[in-house]
Every structure is written in C-alpha cells, then in structure tokens.
Image (cartoon, rainbow, N blue to C red):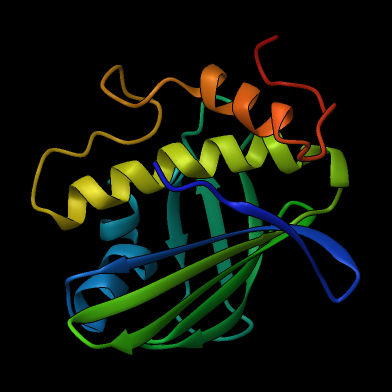
Length: 169
C-alpha cells in the first residue's frame, strides 16, 4: 500500500499522495471532482459549486460535524482546490503515458494532525482505487474498508508528526 509523505507547502505542514492510474484524466476527474464520484471514496458527502469562489459543503462524516468551505480552484479536468475547516485540499491530475497521475495534497492547519490525516487519506485512496477499477467501493467508513489504526501506527512509527486528538477516542 502506497503511503503519503509529510512535507511543507509554503511554510505550512502538509501530507501529499501521488498515484498513477491506467485511466484517462477525464475518468479520474469525474471520480475526484464530482459529488457522485467523491461519494465512493471521500470521507464526507460533498456538494460543491463548480467554480472558484464557490461554496463546498461536507456532511455525513461520522467523525466531523457538517461544515462548509470555499472552492479555491476549479479547472477541469486538471485542478481542484478547496478549504475544509482550517485545512486546504488540492487535487491535481496530469496526463502521463498510459493514464493519469493524481496528486492529492492536504495542507494542514496543525502539524500534529499529519499522521492522523495521512492514515485516513490512505484508506480513502484505497477506496478510490476500487471505484476506478469498477469494483465495489463503499467508502472509508464501511466495514469493508482497510482498518485505520494499523496505518496510523505505521505513520507514527515512521516519525510523521502526530499527537492530535483522534475522533471517537
């Protein structure tokens, strides 16, 4: 299972993931930038106004309360960025031979959330891969999802910043 990396983005802590899929950019865009596609792998139900400055709403996540953010970039089929609580999410898609490279960056409000968020995104990206492959993807909160705790412990053991509260604990 590919892991994310801890980095800094303009002086802010961030976790970054990069995956290459054997699918056209347009297919991956539909999976990562539309409410219908996000429903298969993203931790919250999402509605969004598809333009920079638009509103994005997050709901139905058992670990966080409903919230809204702002769409910062909406450039189909290559870039989507939005705010979520104090974080910023960036999705970048690039055509590569045989498919699409997807880079997801979670710019963090707090450094100590890195391991917690990285573990969650790792699970989400497993669900995205299932959805892109045409298989059943019930989302990161489903019983069929990869367990979170062992992944979190691996990130902590690797030295990724940790210590933030864990929802439900």
